[in-house]
Image 1 (cartoon, rainbow, N blue to C red):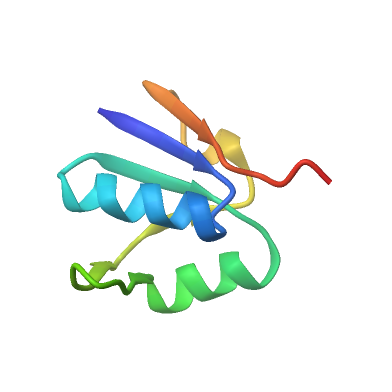
Image 2: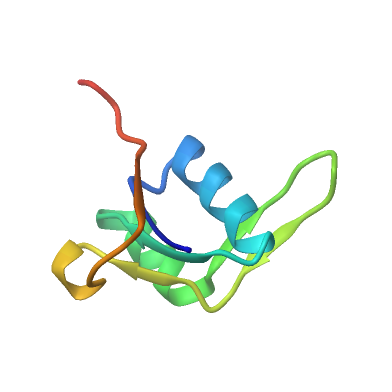
Length: 79
């Protein structure tokens, strides 16, 4: 399944990393410092159950670059 994660902050990174670890095709839609960090270093999720590393990670600020997806997780702040 191809899934787009709109917003790669705390929640988006958590769900995206776990889905990627489960074998799903994940693309992160982010901006600013988060986008630069994901493109440069991949995505690292550290927690009590262990670390998940998504590297390389597909990340962009332009959703049209990803193409069609099966699902979108919209993980952005309201404000």
